[in-house]
Amino acid sequence: MSTAIDQYRITREPYYKPVHNEVELYTAGYGARLPIMLKGPTGCGKSRFVEYMAWKLGRPLITVACNEDMTASDLVGRYLLDKDGTRWQDGPLTTAARIGAICYLDEVVEARQDTIVVIHPLTDHRRVLPLEKKGELVEAHPDFQLVISYNPGYQNLMKDLKQSTKQRFGALDFDYPEAETETEIVAHETGVDRDTAHKLVQIAHRARNLKGHGLDEGLSTRLLVYAGKLIAKGINARAACAMTLVNPITDDPDMRDALETVVTTYF
Image: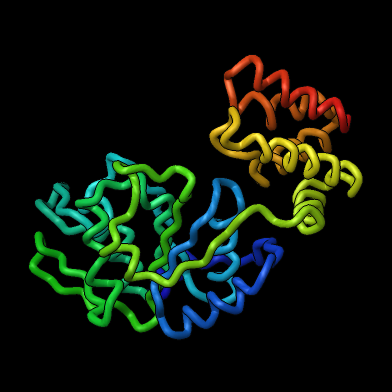
């Protein structure tokens, strides 16, 4: 069991800059073993936050990137054929429940509704996971916690969590940091000087004002880090910004021109 736990442990402290009181709230939530839902735009630090909290709390972390093809068996497990016949293999959710890990379902709304319902018995007073195909009822380890994340900006009638799922979680709202904090993050993560990091953040703030006016989503902190890393490697700032801040988020020629104009304002 110790070997199974150790492979999921985070051994080095992930860099995370607290924005509000999310660390304190999550710590209290974990102490009460509340299921936690992280809501916020793409690339704002949700996954890094979970990694940081798993490290801080000393708990193993099992992350699942949800997608529309993911089945309940992908989460809980299935029977497999090998040279000796059939054997059961636990899925990531079952493994986490057994060993007392934090199970993080990233972008959970991408999964089908009939897949998501398997988490319900783990998110109330029962804290159990029925393995119907195996005929086993797994009682969650006392240290087990379920965490999910999603981007509310992508909600629609087809991709949203049911109220019966939402109301099983405590929720923390995430957004892009204030300019000073985001500048510090970009400088730390990329190694560029603070002035360059500040310029990248200013470009992002200008671009985020275009959300809903030609852009579906604002520039993420993750993309700013990408730009900073290229600049730190000696790439021309305008070329780095075009590659990471302009081209990935829009194919519209007019919108690209608008973003490139913003870039040239600062570089």
